[in-house]
Image 1 (cartoon, rainbow, N blue to C red):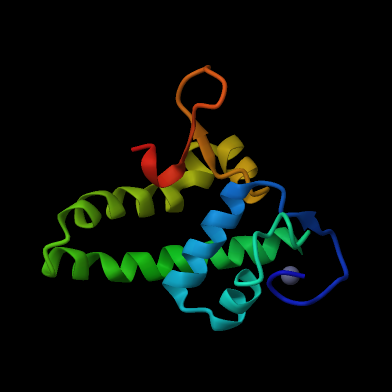
Image 2: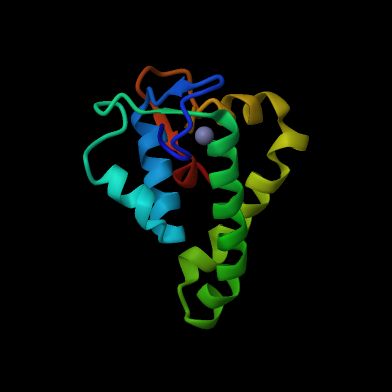
Length: 130
Ligand SMILES: [Zn+2]
């Protein structure tokens, strides 16, 4: 099991590359060496990894918290793109349950792509959709 090692309870399969990407971003940001070691073995899909929804949510909450603490550093160090968009991304993550509960539900299932048009194959990662 991806995050906690506990095989009991309701488990979900890592079924998209977007969840793989998002978990890698979180693990790198948090410098979670245990999770990074698991990720170094390959894509989560190919490893047929499973996870508890609560463990995934806990990872994203920790990730959001840590990003929130880093925002002032992006301003201080002159990383303008991150300084401009990171606060918006963090705000979106924090307000997701309230503003768009259906999106929050899908997000918690591991669906991290955003579709801005109805064209096939036109989904974007959330951080590219602003
Ligand atoms: Zn777990």
